[in-house]
Image 1: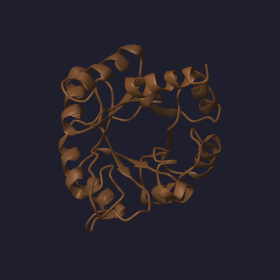
Image 2: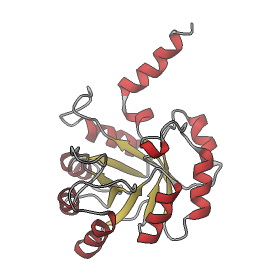
Image 3: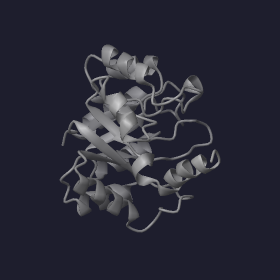
Length: 225
Protein backbone atom coordinates (compact mmCIF):
# COMPACT_ATOMS: atom_id res chain seq x y z
CA UNK A 1 0.00 0.00 0.00
CA UNK A 2 1.46 3.35 -1.06
CA UNK A 3 1.48 6.37 1.23
CA UNK A 4 -1.22 8.92 0.63
CA UNK A 5 -0.43 12.62 0.38
CA UNK A 6 -1.24 14.48 3.57
CA UNK A 7 -0.70 13.97 7.30
CA UNK A 8 1.09 10.90 8.61
CA UNK A 9 0.99 10.57 12.40
CA UNK A 10 3.95 9.01 14.19
CA UNK A 11 2.57 6.92 17.06
CA UNK A 12 5.43 5.84 19.31
CA UNK A 13 6.41 5.58 22.94
CA UNK A 14 9.75 4.46 24.34
CA UNK A 15 10.17 2.33 27.46
CA UNK A 16 10.94 5.34 29.66
CA UNK A 17 7.77 7.21 28.59
CA UNK A 18 4.42 7.04 30.44
CA UNK A 19 2.43 6.02 27.34
CA UNK A 20 4.53 2.91 26.76
CA UNK A 21 2.85 -0.50 26.98
CA UNK A 22 -0.61 -1.98 26.60
CA UNK A 23 -2.75 -0.84 23.67
CA UNK A 24 -2.07 2.88 24.08
CA UNK A 25 -0.28 3.27 20.75
CA UNK A 26 -3.06 1.44 18.91
CA UNK A 27 -5.55 3.91 20.39
CA UNK A 28 -3.37 6.87 19.36
CA UNK A 29 -3.35 5.50 15.82
CA UNK A 30 -7.11 4.94 15.87
CA UNK A 31 -7.69 8.52 17.03
CA UNK A 32 -5.47 9.77 14.19
CA UNK A 33 -7.42 7.60 11.74
CA UNK A 34 -10.78 8.97 12.95
CA UNK A 35 -9.45 12.51 12.61
CA UNK A 36 -8.52 11.91 8.97
CA UNK A 37 -4.80 11.12 9.01
CA UNK A 38 -3.50 9.51 5.82
CA UNK A 39 -0.93 7.19 7.35
CA UNK A 40 0.78 6.00 10.54
CA UNK A 41 4.45 5.63 11.49
CA UNK A 42 5.12 3.11 14.26
CA UNK A 43 7.96 1.44 16.15
CA UNK A 44 8.12 -2.26 17.19
CA UNK A 45 6.44 -5.25 15.59
CA UNK A 46 3.87 -5.39 18.39
CA UNK A 47 2.63 -1.88 17.75
CA UNK A 48 2.80 -2.18 13.95
CA UNK A 49 0.71 -5.34 13.87
CA UNK A 50 -1.61 -4.09 16.59
CA UNK A 51 -2.30 -0.89 14.67
CA UNK A 52 -2.91 -2.80 11.44
CA UNK A 53 -5.49 -4.94 13.21
CA UNK A 54 -7.12 -2.00 15.03
CA UNK A 55 -7.51 -0.02 11.79
CA UNK A 56 -8.40 -3.07 9.70
CA UNK A 57 -5.28 -2.03 7.76
CA UNK A 58 -7.16 0.85 6.13
CA UNK A 59 -4.17 3.19 6.43
CA UNK A 60 -0.61 2.56 5.21
CA UNK A 61 1.89 1.99 8.01
CA UNK A 62 5.53 3.06 8.02
CA UNK A 63 7.37 0.56 10.17
CA UNK A 64 10.61 1.00 12.08
CA UNK A 65 12.46 -0.84 14.81
CA UNK A 66 14.60 1.27 17.12
CA UNK A 67 17.53 -0.76 18.39
CA UNK A 68 20.64 0.64 20.06
CA UNK A 69 24.01 -0.99 19.34
CA UNK A 70 27.15 -0.06 21.26
CA UNK A 71 29.32 0.27 18.15
CA UNK A 72 27.12 2.59 16.11
CA UNK A 73 25.03 5.76 16.38
CA UNK A 74 22.48 4.32 13.93
CA UNK A 75 19.38 3.07 15.77
CA UNK A 76 16.44 3.30 13.32
CA UNK A 77 16.21 -0.14 11.65
CA UNK A 78 20.00 -0.46 11.82
CA UNK A 79 20.68 -4.05 10.70
CA UNK A 80 19.39 -6.95 8.63
CA UNK A 81 17.94 -8.44 11.84
CA UNK A 82 15.44 -5.58 12.17
CA UNK A 83 14.78 -5.52 8.42
CA UNK A 84 13.78 -9.20 8.41
CA UNK A 85 11.33 -8.62 11.26
CA UNK A 86 9.74 -5.68 9.43
CA UNK A 87 9.41 -7.70 6.22
CA UNK A 88 7.35 -10.24 8.15
CA UNK A 89 5.26 -7.52 9.81
CA UNK A 90 2.09 -5.79 8.64
CA UNK A 91 3.86 -2.54 7.73
CA UNK A 92 3.65 -1.23 4.16
CA UNK A 93 6.81 0.89 4.20
CA UNK A 94 10.11 0.07 5.89
CA UNK A 95 11.99 3.14 7.13
CA UNK A 96 15.77 3.05 7.55
CA UNK A 97 18.33 5.43 8.95
CA UNK A 98 19.85 6.60 5.65
CA UNK A 99 22.64 8.71 7.10
CA UNK A 100 26.21 8.06 6.04
CA UNK A 101 27.22 6.93 9.51
CA UNK A 102 28.70 3.47 10.06
CA UNK A 103 26.08 0.85 10.79
CA UNK A 104 26.48 -1.97 13.32
CA UNK A 105 28.25 -5.07 12.04
CA UNK A 106 28.82 -5.60 8.33
CA UNK A 107 25.54 -4.17 7.08
CA UNK A 108 25.47 -1.13 4.82
CA UNK A 109 22.58 0.93 3.49
CA UNK A 110 22.72 -0.38 -0.09
CA UNK A 111 22.77 -4.02 0.97
CA UNK A 112 19.72 -3.52 3.19
CA UNK A 113 17.78 -1.82 0.39
CA UNK A 114 18.67 -4.63 -2.01
CA UNK A 115 17.60 -7.24 0.52
CA UNK A 116 14.20 -5.59 1.00
CA UNK A 117 13.68 -5.33 -2.76
CA UNK A 118 14.51 -8.99 -3.32
CA UNK A 119 12.55 -10.40 -0.38
CA UNK A 120 9.38 -8.29 -0.25
CA UNK A 121 7.15 -5.86 -2.11
CA UNK A 122 7.28 -3.31 0.70
CA UNK A 123 8.24 0.27 -0.12
CA UNK A 124 11.31 1.85 1.49
CA UNK A 125 11.78 5.20 3.24
CA UNK A 126 15.09 6.98 3.94
CA UNK A 127 15.44 8.93 7.19
CA UNK A 128 18.03 11.63 6.43
CA UNK A 129 19.75 14.58 8.11
CA UNK A 130 21.81 16.25 5.36
CA UNK A 131 21.49 17.04 1.67
CA UNK A 132 24.36 14.67 0.88
CA UNK A 133 22.40 11.85 2.49
CA UNK A 134 19.28 12.85 0.57
CA UNK A 135 21.17 12.70 -2.74
CA UNK A 136 22.65 9.32 -1.84
CA UNK A 137 19.25 7.89 -0.92
CA UNK A 138 17.77 9.10 -4.19
CA UNK A 139 20.58 7.44 -6.15
CA UNK A 140 20.18 4.17 -4.24
CA UNK A 141 16.51 4.06 -5.15
CA UNK A 142 14.39 4.76 -2.07
CA UNK A 143 10.67 5.30 -2.65
CA UNK A 144 10.42 8.03 -0.01
CA UNK A 145 13.03 10.36 1.44
CA UNK A 146 12.39 12.17 4.72
CA UNK A 147 14.01 14.87 6.85
CA UNK A 148 13.42 12.75 9.98
CA UNK A 149 16.96 13.02 11.38
CA UNK A 150 17.59 16.70 10.63
CA UNK A 151 19.28 18.22 13.73
CA UNK A 152 19.55 14.81 15.43
CA UNK A 153 22.99 13.81 14.14
CA UNK A 154 26.46 15.25 14.71
CA UNK A 155 26.51 16.44 11.10
CA UNK A 156 23.30 18.44 11.55
CA UNK A 157 23.51 19.30 15.25
CA UNK A 158 22.35 22.77 16.25
CA UNK A 159 20.14 23.30 13.21
CA UNK A 160 16.75 24.65 14.19
CA UNK A 161 13.79 22.60 13.02
CA UNK A 162 11.52 22.71 11.18
CA UNK A 163 14.15 23.60 8.57
CA UNK A 164 12.09 25.21 5.81
CA UNK A 165 15.04 25.92 3.53
CA UNK A 166 16.24 22.33 3.80
CA UNK A 167 12.79 21.18 2.70
CA UNK A 168 13.01 23.39 -0.37
CA UNK A 169 16.45 21.98 -1.14
CA UNK A 170 15.11 18.45 -0.85
CA UNK A 171 12.25 19.20 -3.23
CA UNK A 172 14.66 20.71 -5.74
CA UNK A 173 17.19 17.89 -5.41
CA UNK A 174 15.21 14.66 -5.27
CA UNK A 175 14.45 13.31 -8.75
CA UNK A 176 13.03 9.83 -8.24
CA UNK A 177 11.52 9.55 -4.75
CA UNK A 178 8.69 11.28 -2.91
CA UNK A 179 9.83 13.87 -0.36
CA UNK A 180 8.47 13.60 3.17
CA UNK A 181 8.82 16.35 5.76
CA UNK A 182 9.34 15.38 9.40
CA UNK A 183 10.75 17.22 12.38
CA UNK A 184 9.88 20.14 14.63
CA UNK A 185 6.26 20.84 13.73
CA UNK A 186 4.64 21.92 16.99
CA UNK A 187 1.49 23.74 15.88
CA UNK A 188 -0.92 24.14 12.92
CA UNK A 189 0.74 27.50 12.23
CA UNK A 190 4.15 25.85 11.88
CA UNK A 191 2.65 23.19 9.61
CA UNK A 192 1.22 25.92 7.38
CA UNK A 193 4.73 27.32 6.84
CA UNK A 194 6.03 23.86 5.92
CA UNK A 195 3.20 23.26 3.46
CA UNK A 196 4.04 26.53 1.70
CA UNK A 197 7.16 24.78 0.36
CA UNK A 198 4.96 22.50 -1.72
CA UNK A 199 5.79 19.29 0.16
CA UNK A 200 2.88 16.83 -0.02
CA UNK A 201 3.73 14.33 2.73
CA UNK A 202 4.20 15.40 6.36
CA UNK A 203 4.92 13.31 9.46
CA UNK A 204 4.02 14.75 12.86
CA UNK A 205 4.70 12.84 16.06
CA UNK A 206 5.43 14.50 19.38
CA UNK A 207 3.01 17.40 18.91
CA UNK A 208 0.14 14.91 18.64
CA UNK A 209 1.06 11.72 20.48
CA UNK A 210 3.43 12.61 23.32
CA UNK A 211 1.47 14.27 26.16
CA UNK A 212 4.53 14.49 28.41
CA UNK A 213 6.37 16.51 25.78
CA UNK A 214 3.30 18.62 25.00
CA UNK A 215 2.70 19.44 28.68
CA UNK A 216 6.33 20.48 29.17
CA UNK A 217 6.05 22.85 26.21
CA UNK A 218 3.05 24.61 27.75
CA UNK A 219 4.68 24.73 31.19
CA UNK A 220 7.64 26.52 29.66
CA UNK A 221 5.38 29.54 29.12
CA UNK A 222 4.71 29.77 32.85
CA UNK A 223 8.41 30.38 33.45
CA UNK A 224 8.03 33.64 31.52
CA UNK A 225 4.75 34.57 33.23
